[in-house]
Length: 101
Image 1 (tube, rainbow, N blue to C red):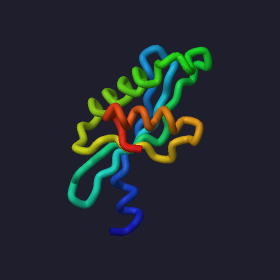
Image 2 (cartoon, rainbow, N blue to C red):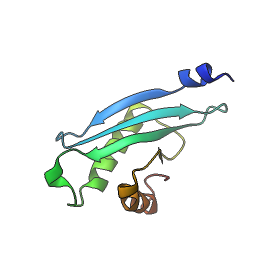
Image 3 (cartoon, rainbow, N blue to C red):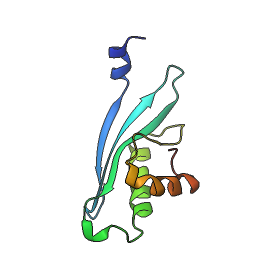
Image 4 (cartoon, helix red, strand yellow):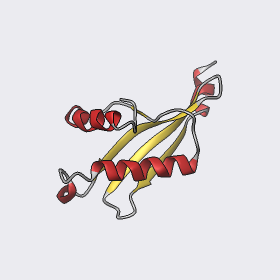
């Protein structure tokens, strides 16, 4: 399949938490067999005063709920290009069974 056809199969979406203190971006990936999963491109807490307070998992769960309501998939969300300073967070979220890193 050509690259331009593959790019047509990607659906990007942005998200902002209900309180406006966290944002995320994801793209939907659909493979040739029709299986789909969300790829998390960007996720973070934008309000500096809320960093390090253990809110990351709550915001991530809100983000994942939003994504699945937008389009139900049959694959676990995968984190794309996790920032080095956030690896421990993503590893914990993988241990919780929320994402694949």
